[in-house]
Amino acid sequence: MDGARDPSYSEVGFGEYLKDVVKASSLPKEVMFFDTTLRDGEQTPGVSFTADEKVSIAKALDELGVDVIEAGFPVNSEEEERIVREIAKAGLKAKVCGLARSLRADIDSCIRCDVQRVHLFIATSDIHLRYKLNKTEEEALRQAVDAVEYVRDHGLECEFSCEDATRTPIERLLRFYKAVEEAGAAYFNVPDTVGVIEPDAMKSLISSLRGYLRGTISVHCHNDLGLAVANSIAGVKAGAEQVHVTVNGLGERAGNASLEQTAVALRLMYGVNSRIRLELLTEVSKLVQRYSMINITPNYPVVGSNAFAHESGIHVHGVLQNFACYEPYPPEVVGQKRRIVMGKHTGRHAVSSFVKGYFGEVPDDKVQVVVERVKHLSALKKKISEDDVLAIAEEVLGKVEEAGKAFELEEIVVVTGNKVTPTASVQVRLPDGVMQVAAGVGVGPVDAASNAIQRALGKELRLLNFKLEAISGGTDSLASVQVTVEDLKGNKATGSAVSGDIVMSSVQALVEGLNRLMLRARQRAD
Image 1 (cartoon, rainbow, N blue to C red):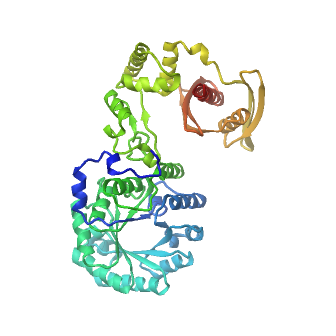
Image 2: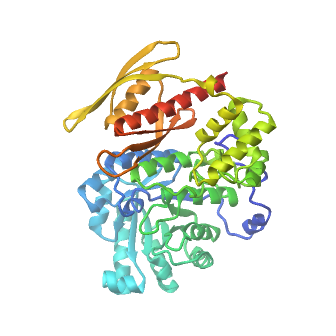
Image 3: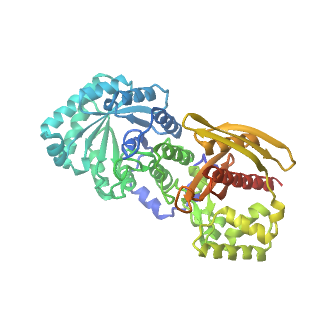
């Protein structure tokens, strides 16, 4: 399926019951996505993006199709103001927004950044007014109105949030939102600041506001009870036309509503249009994982590595016939790939499909032997990799001698030190006897060696996984290294090695992985 095209109801597995729910909801035809990864997402404990990383993420979000990018909290520091200004001047299609308390100094900082929208907020719940602001309701309301008028007088769009809205009495919420609407605000955001509302209550709250305000209603949900996405969808079902999200659900404490999950659910379950290009979701998720250094769990919905992975023989058999047997939509829709995982639950169909992908037609009796060997290996609590299965298949099919090697590492010299750029030079021998010599530099000795080997072979790869373990204690411990490498076509292979030298163990693992990757490419070509 073309990943750029959203599937129709006939192509997805959501069932008939959902159609009645959609008909009974006050769903808008289109919803806007307000991404706050660079502001609320960066408030995740331990996360701090560099200036270049923030600009790179902003450009990726713009390509993804978000409508508004909350680039930061400019008054927080001179550096933050500089970065927000740089993003605002990057020529993005998305509107760039700056966060501000209801204070003129905060607003002035946003104005200096040349943002198109200012997101104002002030706390309105009893607990926040008393313990955080030490203000009366009237004092907070006057401050809010003054701030909105100040933004309006400077010709900028104004979005206003009653912080802790879901713990604020409804009469007070209506009073605040109506007052700021009359002062010039056009967007009214409802934050579930500590993640304590649930979908039915959110739907009721947004319905009350929808009948009272003329402008655009938005929702900003936190995930303290795991309901952020559900509450965001409930808000849209009640008429909210904008949702606040973060990539990978980053944010304070348990995080915010996930951009990926919210976008897919609204588009595919409810048919609500947006500018989000679903096929780019996985790519953007990986970018933010890399910069935030927070990896999502394998079973994370939509973009997790197991989101379209299958091991059970029953499931594999079904999904190979028709994806909708065990997937709600094809993985290509969100830029993913289906994975058939080998393990103790693996059945004949999975192994047959996998092995035939490499060796063509294989007799059923041989497939069954491979299945039994895979199950036996997995019963020993060993994690089964594709390379394990291929090794078993090669042995069963008598192809071990045929495989050979794509290249051999004849010589390697690695230089590193505290005042030396890590450098490596290598000699590799190709099957026809030709010697290739190359050098490379890197951030460390292993990276330098990898770059030199790739240059010698004329191959480009990505190192997806690097796992180093000391087998025993002491400085003379043997080092066990396992790597996963991927070529530009998305083909993967693993390599492993054990040595008393960490660098050489890493190099040997890389060589093994690269050999497997190149041999498989050759087999496919044949």
